[in-house]
Amino acid sequence: VYGAQSLKACQSAFESFKQKWSAYLGAIDVWTRNFHHVEQLFDYGSAIRKIMYTTNAVEAIHSSFRKVTQKGAFPDETALLKVLFLRVKELEAKWDGGFIQNWSLVRNQLLVHEGFEDKVLKYS
Image 1: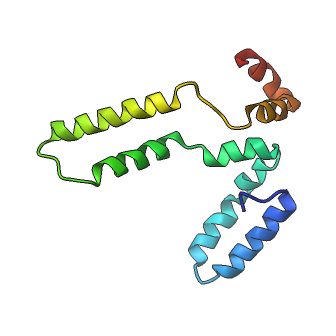
Image 2: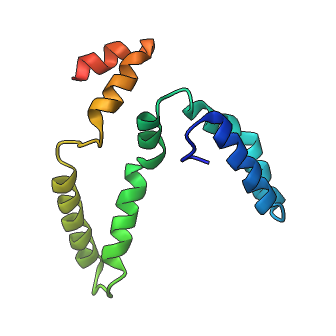
């Protein structure tokens, strides 16, 4: 659904999803009630959409924390906090600079929208 190239393709993928998962009415109902949020993504270009639906910094941090804490037992709370602190420092170094893939394409797509032009130029 998220990777569709157009709103029409997205709606088609959603219909396929509903048929495939028809046994799970609760899940389909949640998607149906909130599908207008997904449709709003298609007001923007493909590069902007990719950033919107793939960027979740909190989820990435939690995933990283799970990776470093699942490997062993910790003798006390301080040991665990030290491991998490070191992981945060690694992530901070990794994310320094706020690199966004295809930034020039994203920037141009944002400049097309009137509401974003001033904000994009302010931070460029």
